[in-house]
Length: 253
Image (spheres, rainbow, N blue to C red):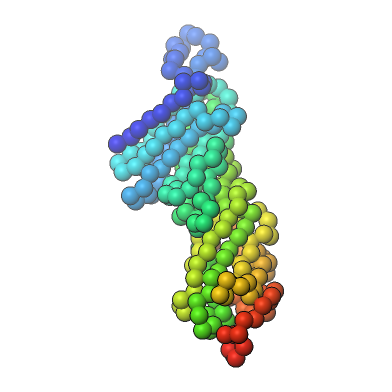
């Protein structure tokens, strides 16, 4: 099933022109091509933006995908966006934000300028991976006798839908160690070096680690078209050790 919402205040025109009329005043026929979208059991949200204001919002799923759709637009430039996988994200205007306390969604997205100056325009939606699954290898810390609390924080936990650039949003995600040594966390694109890990034992901070610098030293590219997954070993030498509680005294690391 296909649901359509068109804001009434926009230049989405339903008029048509004959051959004899001055076609400069005719709308542009914009073709949205979803033939390359491969989505299973999820909804694709498509929007057209006019100077930062959403003027078209469409939702496609199931048999709607893989088809082409036509829109009548006033002759000017617009921005188009499409995304899927936003199950827990907060919608804030033209941004999608990670909810505080959660890891990022498995978000795939597309953004493109729509040149509707002429009589016809066409865009193929090609979705790209907007999250990185960073698996932290905490073998050096998982030797502790009791579970540890690991807290990740960053200044960036969102995406700007009109360009797919990272959006500022306070990010915090916590997990407890369980002896498995490897802990995957989904992160959005980062815009600075604020991504930090802090490790607690018994409510006391024992280590603070700048994860951004570790990723940078491994050559990780947050600006890649599709974000890659990566495993990051976190060793004691990476940490700013603040307290070493008694259970760690005799641990051989």
